[in-house]
Length: 343
Image (cartoon, rainbow, N blue to C red):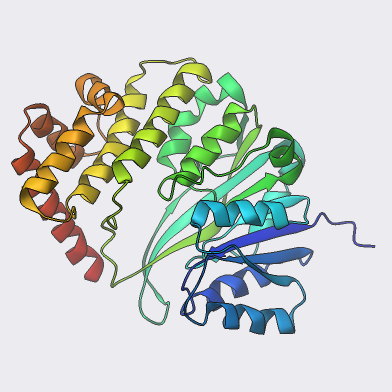
């Protein structure tokens, strides 16, 4: 009998035939062999399911589950329901796990409900070879829950330990006892919302410096926000959760860092608004609606620190209702980022 805990690795996927092979292979390469890989297909119309079935025929640890075309949050929730393990880890279909990820995270799992590892952010070419890479991780292990998180929270945010559900190991017992699930209304920053919900339910959080995950983006991608007609509603929802977390868990309502994080979410919606159908007048109307939302209006009026100079200028212009200038500034920003990634 295998004494090692079983870890379920959940991979939600949609039309990922060109990349899913690398993602599943990285899960199967784990140095801990007692795993299952649950690929939750979200209604692919390409060969994604065929590729996964090839894996499952050669390795019984791979299972394919069909969730229907219902969104990434629902797909992950299906993965939680289908998981048979003691722990669950998430991997996106276009990313890869470090070979020792599960082993590294399990080493701390007895002391936490969530163990989070560091991530590398890699730009790759068409052959998936790394062109450039940056790493984010904590300096040393940090463990806390509830209000104790206040001593580490800003460092965890800056090091990207909160914004993603990937590079983490979750206790399935905790998720099921607390009833934690992804908010199926969200398809952007749903990871952050999920992690904050877990922490709000008194999860003990352990952050470790081991690099466990490779977040991959190709040289052909611009990193600009893909247009979503409900992005303002989504970002408002997530922003309100961040404010509530600061107030009720960290007991730091009105904190300057909280306003800075809300501005970061606001700018995501600003960039998304630039692709509003109809252009010009419709774009400016979308931004006027965005800045009128209470949570964003309060953040822009109280912010004293900003994620970057672009964010500060956007807030300054919007506070004077110079939406044409914001539109032009965002257009420049998206163009510059496109050139940087392509080069």
